[in-house]
Amino acid sequence: MTIFSKIVAGDIPAYKVAETLEFLAFLDISPLTEGHLLVIPKKEVDNLFDLDDETYTGLMLFAKIVAAGMKKAIPCNRIGVTVIGLEVPHAHIHLIPINTMGDMNFANPKLKFTPEQFRATADKIREAL
Image 1 (cartoon, one colour):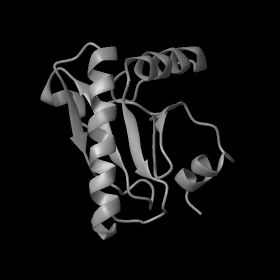
Image 2: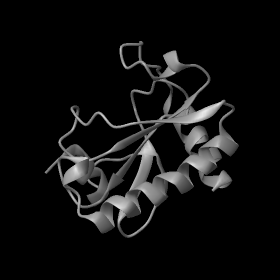
Image 3: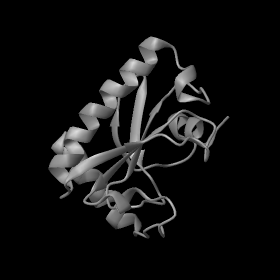
């Protein structure tokens, strides 16, 4: 069971911003920018491109809805999208509020936020949805 499956099961807490029966969006706890979040299928599949077509397209549509809320809640030029998938063997999409291309460089130092700051960011995005 992956750490993401444990979040889905409620065994590990997360700063959730959106959830359906099939998908979940929550803040990355090692963000590149404020509002950086992960969008996952609840179904545990390692590689994004191994998802069945219905789950894959549903995940992308869910990410689009979440990104629209992020854009309203977090001042930025756009919402960057990346799929790396090496950190956790569970398909996931990074949605990252960006102002420059460099904002999406995973070699950058990760930001540190307090639990209160994470909660406030999650609340802002949830309210914008």
